[in-house]
Amino acid sequence: GPVMRGGFEADERLEVLNQQVASIRQPTKTASSEAMLSVSPSGLPPSALVAGKVTFKTEKANALQVPLLSGSFSKPIVVHWIYQETPVFVNVKDLSELGFLTWVAKAVGARLNPAGKTFNFDLDPIEIRKRAVATIQALPTSRPRKDDDAIVKNGQTFRIACLNALTAGQLTEALATAGASIRLELGPRSPLTNLALQRVRDLEQYQRNMPADSPAPRTAIGLLQRVDRSRMAALIVDSRFGIRLEVPVVDENGRSAGVVRLN
Image 1 (cartoon, rainbow, N blue to C red):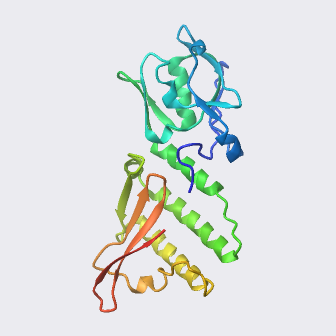
Image 2: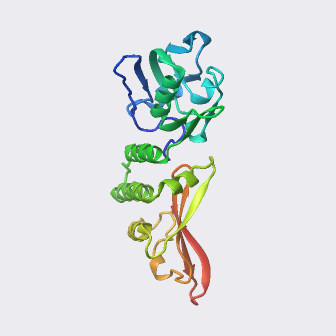
Image 3: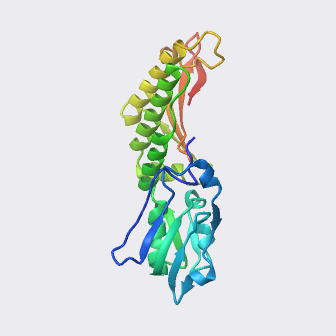
């Protein structure tokens, strides 16, 4: 699945006219996995802050992480869980602590709330969705079989369409904690219902064309003819932007018989 806590597929290079900030950014989408794994997370050394101003440049083998910055500034830092492991590369000179943290928040896709007794890096659900979509779009789709390739692409399209249909409040609820999820009922007026129907049809066609000896499940075949219309299907969205369908079904006697789950 996509990486949700350590490098979204986005390049947030940020410039200011007074040249105090040469750059504060996340790693680019061209950065290799090996290069990302070799980066050591760190905070700011004491020498980086002089008279309330930040002057610091990360080297190739190092990157800042927001939680590790706590203790360097005038107030503690509180970070939404999704930003805790995001690496940030900086090159700044004589930048105020508020200015520095504001640019870091923009780089990781958070909203900085400096009010109160802490600097809060709050969730920005719309920005996080944009980066999640970019990550999904960058995932490889090539598979040995042409049918496999097509269903992977269909799955990515379905995921993106579902994420784009969620409200900011729904996204916030789904990302409330690292293990959170939301359940959205697919009523006749839900914009997600048609997306779910098409996903079931795509999976059914794919499963009908699978090799006879394939051990993969065939749960989508005939599913739409077995739907229990007395109960609503649902879309489950989890905190790592996973999407799962739950379709209630009836047995051969027309009685309620649990649900079929499709990823």
